Length: 449
Image 1 (cartoon, rainbow, N blue to C red):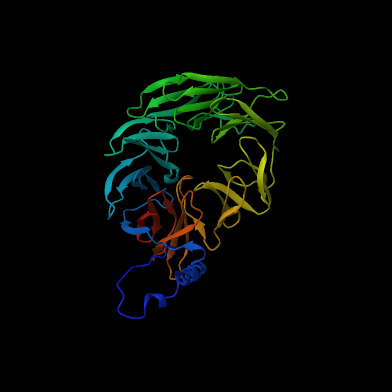
Image 2: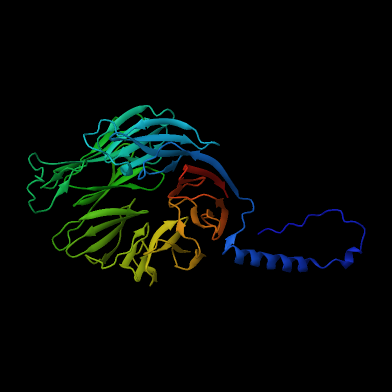
């Protein structure tokens, strides 16, 4: 906390030499700070912090529909017949309805659950994905611009979206009524087939109008990941090679052949930061490559099954609950370990440890050493949010409401924001706003640290 000495004109009295030395005030101020930290459970007093209630959105919302905070707007999902309805709201005081649109457009028959809807702003469009179908709408007006029968991934900063469409041999659709055993392979729309795909069409779409800018068609099944960095790129992992492709043009940047191990090619691939992880089965093995250069980094055996696996998001883990090691993605070596039953996720630049049984936050740790950076004892739940945004925390405030606090990236301290004196359900947050369900509707707060 900051201790400020206000230099005011004093009334006549003892000479200045009779005033206690400044160190006495410092001692008193430090004692007061320690008392406040103890009373507030380790939270930093909210001096200089803005916490403002904006209002409630009272329109009917689907009970299982998501809440999305992005680009300074709130997106909610309701229902109208079989179709979810996405509504955009401003973050004004009070919030204003901007537009509503049904999603998806042109989908097949059947009910699309609101819980399957995602909203992703991308420049001057917003992509609404319900199930697997995607509808692009004008971000300002909600006017439909184009649609895709399959999911679209946004390449940040490029104006390009990527689709992955598996092409199968005719006559291989699985007869679900037969119940015949055997491996199944699924199309981008979820249709099962009895044979692997002949090829996979990876397309780059112009997000403004949906037209195809480029197409790459590797053979067989592949995984496609967005590579972080200033130059938009995608990494395609097939059973034969790694291919780095320009996100803007689709031109190949570089390739690397993948070896067969024990007679088997890779079973899949994933990206963790700037490291590509290629997985093999029978026996299990993980091989790491630098995503931009395709340089091989390391290889390690992995078990086919873990009895009690931990949920690790954005963290490379080995082992399970009670014996969990955190690995360095660049070397594959163990950085630190924990013997607690916790799940791990990257939040606010730290590793958030949550109790595997209750979901309560335990601590924030240094991702390199495992040392405790922030003790989260007393906070009942983290608020959903992006990995690089401030971590918002909540707990009961003792008056029937909820108290909220935040941990800002780069600052190892809990900063109290304020309280909400109402019963609240699920919440979502970004770097500026908090939205929570309540019996009165969706309540919205603005905060600044």
